[in-house]
Amino acid sequence: MVNKYNAALIGKKGQRGLKWLNEWEAIIAKAIYYNIAKLKKGRWLRDFIFQIRLVAKSFSDKLLDKVNDSTL
Image (tube, rainbow, N blue to C red):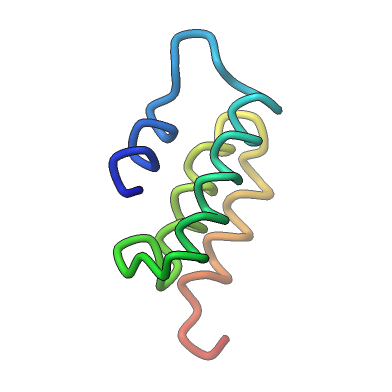
């Protein structure tokens, strides 16, 4: 699962947008189902933020601030 997850982060050449998001989301669902510790504790959210950064910088910055806020 971790290898599939890492491969989805890198993506296939030209694979972006909804196709990438659908593949990534399916892998996250399996990781949650199988309780994969390496993909828990917010790593998936940070990875998602960095993936969307180029197309939604202000949104990703706000989301990253919330993820890094220890009071939340």
